Length: 417
Image (cartoon, rainbow, N blue to C red; front, side):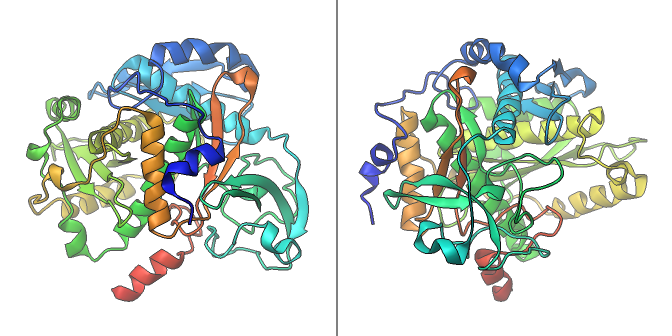
């Protein structure tokens, strides 16, 4: 086991301290306006044609934008949210740019089976698959090189878990693993991007495991919002209250100890003639206040995504009146009992630098046995930012995805029920 203090340096994730220059709802190495100015020249290459402020389509007022990429090889509309409009714009364009990177990978690929590669390949047992997976040890598929910082070496990872090029025909071996954007992230610095990617993977794992808890145990994780003592989070909660939108928050933190929250919102007034379906958001970060603010703003973003109807991965069933009513009933049932958990019960890790956050999260994964974490650097110098894909074998994927197949952690939790 490698000492946690040397992890970042060996991986090449940072060669110096990366101070947090912006801390309003998120921790960034640069102010959002600086980042926006830096990446704007790359819009044309990435195919970004419009950054639309859609905040005013709802009454809540939390900034949300939609970023259009008509020639995308995955989804053509990305979303962004934040405590300010500039922060929301950066959130949206960074998501669009990182998707572009994953759609246009130029790194060398290897065609081989896991059996042929042997120890050259990352252990595949904990990698996310679907119920219709075609994987077998003899299946020949594409692989690419990744850094394993907790092992101090490089290994090959399935290309299907890295790229986002959904054009047909698909590459040889496609269908073995889950193809999604989970673990794809960008940042002003490689450290920032990697931290964000790891946080997203832990967040999705936490959500999936939380959903598998018995109902009474899920109910016990609901946070008493009156106990939230962070200024920005309180301001966000006030916006929902003023808009007569009910908010429920559950703490989903797992044994990893990285603060994670799930937020659900729904129209409070039962007499609303055409209510919007409940929307949900999640957040995970070393600082619990940032994790909560991300969950709150993502819920607002999810609601505006439904209202605007601009995402190309939404279907007619999402707007069917019967489906909306059913989702509202489930939300009301889940929030019928009063919340009992205090916000301060969630773990919290405060630091002044992004590299300290990354080291802490890597050490948490290492201590819990997730040592095969892999980092693929997809950065392009001309983009002006860092883009990575992080893969952590053993963490659960998004359970809401079609064909979800429970991993080892989920199966263990199901057996305990």
